[in-house]
Image 1 (cartoon, rainbow over the protein chains, first blue to last red):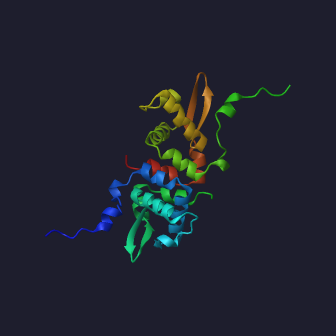
Image 2 (cartoon, each protein chain N blue to C red):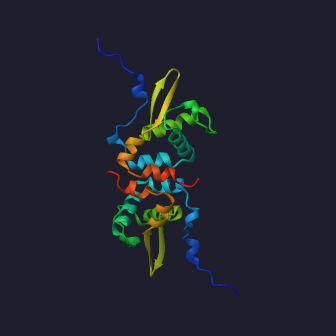
Image 3 (tube, each protein chain N blue to C red):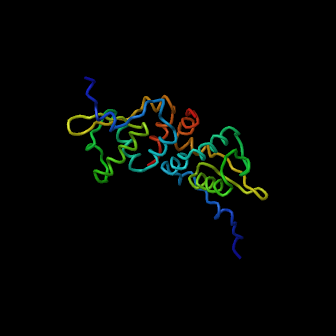
Length: 109
Length: 109
């Protein structure tokens, strides 16, 4: 018998570092709500549960934004109980696009 | 009599540094053709006429891309004869978002 497949890895696709594209990252960050979520992740310097974001959007919109950020390679996420924990992929982004994230986070609000 | 108005300044709106918004800049840069145009401007370290860009798009599409970049504050432009000269607003972008442009230009193609 083969391995038991892990549904989360296919449902929650996260690109490897080599698959991360600058255009996709920029598109993901160009939305004000997503940019604010990235700021919150940068501030907390750790993981945030999906319910831990301070955003004024519906749960389904939040899920959409998290998916866009995750598929672009901006954030990583892993299941934890009935929710998911999310973090900023700072190491990957800093290696690929040195200065990009700091420049964005330094932007006037 | 009042001054003769300069139609180009209203037709070709260019935001002041204080009006440049990170979300608008990121959106402008998230398009592959526009990102390539910015790379070309960064390489030439000077000004490029509208016809000087090496892009595989129609003239009207090029005009649209130039407008998007200009209105976002990524590039500046000025009339010169029958064409316009364009340049990267590196000083403004580096002051507002230090590291952003270098990080983007360092991105793997």
